[in-house]
Length: 133
Image (tube, rainbow, N blue to C red):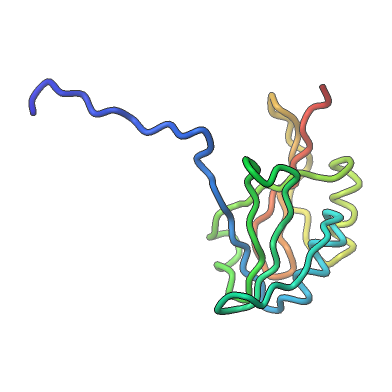
């Protein structure tokens, strides 16, 4: 209809879930556990094994899982930003020592700071530290 304006969709959370493909689930779990201090467990209840990334808010929190798969070629897939458990510098050091590659210096934005990295499988991961309130 002429003159009718389409309503835009603005959900509370545009991102509702994330999936990170890793070539070896156990190795991926070890990497993400070391870097982010996650308590990761293997879940065999579905069609393939996965490992849930925890969230402190089971009702409204947004998280995801690791799964056995082939990541996009480095530099071509999306970047998933994950909250750091302590400081950006400490997490970036663990990221590198666990086999990831830190790809940038810290970048300041209004809500905090982040750095780009690639996990051992080539996934683009943002390390995000929120401003302290």
